[in-house]
Image (cartoon, rainbow, N blue to C red; front, side):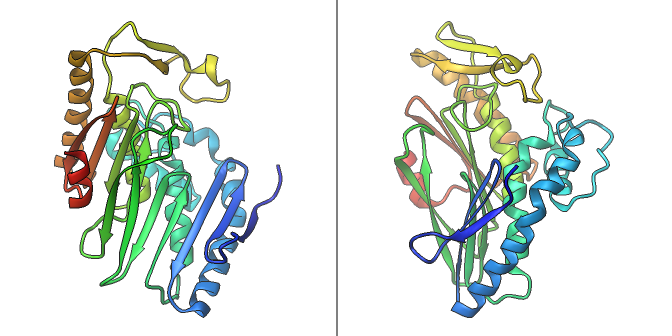
Length: 287
């Protein structure tokens, strides 16, 4: 395995951190001296992060149950904490790995620094930092295979959103559902990551146009075993679309009522549904 790589992108503003499957884009705003120091801190923390996860990978691939796995790495603990409220359903801490990595590097970025705002984008799972008066505008993609913006979310300091994540059957991870994209806003990237995964799993319906396959057949490294994952979604009738979206909405509302998410946007075949405190700009697009 090659070591961690770090360097500024061509724009000179954003830091790129890459190690194995982890690929981060970091951007901080504030005095130049503070940004340079923050980037150094992020690089230093990132260097050992993947190795720490690998040491405890066997525990992190096990389903969350009544007894918490005893892990010690800071990122691994974040993963366990994020999935723990969802342990009554099938979920492993790996459902929160991308968001937890973003949160962990964000914490290192900020220690002792005076920054106006920052974000860390881990391939779509995003940790956010804001100070009073600062805003951050994010684009929402409704189809993970078509990188065009379907909406925008403007985050402000006075709203508690500090993490955004998107999941769907065409994303990086396998899904039990058929959502093209589920974007979740939460208090952390880790919380948003696992919630987006589970809501996307819930957007589902039985239909002959949906093709599924055992996860282990598609990926011999997966922790999902023989559980069926979605590999193709064909044309769906209006009734089936509504059933699938309603199931996802019910799961999102349950999480909202439990205080696990702040908002969610569900997309399936150009149909969009929203739950919770969705920013006005995005709500306008969804409607």
